[in-house]
Length: 426
Ligand SMILES: [Zn+2]
Ligand SMILES: [Zn+2]
Image (tube, rainbow, N blue to C red):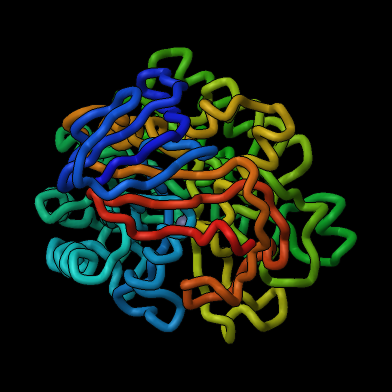
């Protein structure tokens, strides 16, 4: 048994914000209450800390199978645990692509043997994510996928999108789309605008994303199926999502920590600033933050996208898209959203817990009978992010060397402490 004592329990699902203890037995929560005692239990003193439901990341890349030089299920999930995540959804753009039950089973088995947190695979929409024939989605669902996506690319055609939405609706799976119009974005490496002109880098217009979001929302209207927009980054995309929701469509969205933190004005000739979608304008960032605050956006998804150092240490134009995300996500949320009074701490916790859970159609709360997944964090612990100390195999982060206030202090998955920060060292 494990007793988490003296913490401030923040549970968005029940709107609880109170000094409570949490008692865990095996892999389940057995009691949440004031002044609990459990003779013989291990005690975790959470004095001064927030005790929250386990964080869920809807969007990451663990690179296994096939790109183990950049990351593995083991190293990626150790980084996730260090970021306070207890469950991560991994995108299917591995080598080979996760487009069949046998590959899904391989990921699930590898995770059971080596992962520090729960791994929930996302299956491909189409065979090899080529945008042609549908992948074997029902068989992948039986093997453990929680959603489908061709992430890395958009679902290629309206016809395929309609087909997968109708099919996944009968299976109860959300369709996650990486929204981009490749005919507009081709060759672009950052957001098109004054900053791309100044740097002399080829730009991608905001419309590359919003045209695809508009298409997908129209298809959600047609099919009435569940649609989730990955890494949403533009004002107009958010408008489409808001309009869809106001009409009762089942459309959800996530935003990454880098899109609510940085803008195209921050881009330098450093491939740690190259991601897809690219960093957006200041106005877009403002819009995204308002959407995170008012409930139009459901989740913070990291889009943790490791690339081994050799592949990123090249000219900006030639570098692959993507940055690390797990370990800095909470600290960026605390700094950019809570400390700047853009939203309350309870809402930030919701964006990491019950928000993403709802997208997946599951519950996430601290209550008797629930899985013992708990994230314990500090809102005032000072620390500095050193990417060279990361358990990840990759080093591509624009936040290396940044000092933060507030950090994950302990991550508990199925009743086991899988990460604990030494509070003495910063
Ligand atoms: Zn993507
Ligand atoms: Zn991605």
